[in-house]
Image (tube, rainbow, N blue to C red; front, side, top):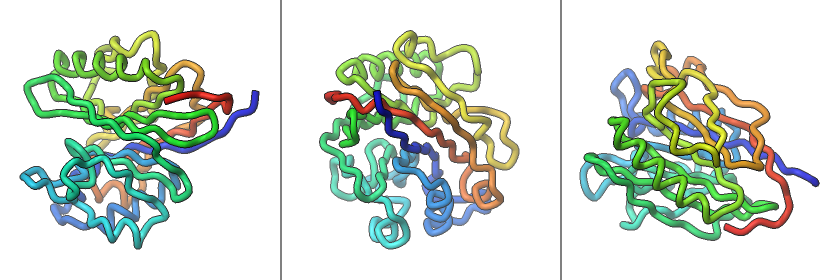
Length: 236
């Protein structure tokens, strides 16, 4: 059976505000370009207060990258939904978008995007809550949503500090990959940013961008994985 390989990255951009407390969208995009990813999921892509204006102007993304913004916002203004945005390399297409409300004391959500790639793929981008009891409920919702699809990548800021506990709702349908310590960018001590792939997908490599630029651009470092997908037919 033949396979295709793509690179997916996840990056909490902190509303494009760096550790120098300067909001510099161009710097954020420079970090994103350096990831050389086919799909990038972003967290904190929009400002907090309504109407949640984008942290990075849409026209700047179009001008400075070879990535297209997937339209997941429901207000026509934001880059994302609950701050979750998805970028795809030009040439890749999204055939379906679904917004998923997540339970918990904080407003949280996820976006589920169907990607037109050989074999089919769904990407779920999320930013989980600060309390483990909420994260567990949120992961249960996400894994049930994932059962509608054959090939799924779930990625984002999982906010889970433990390397051994907290992600049990994803078992046994997902393999969770921790590319490395991504928080705090100044001195990474926690692997908060992770990628989970459904059975049948294989992560062949991954890592953390700990470049000098990335260490200044946000309080999180971006993570990436190279994933192999079987190219047999799949629906999403």
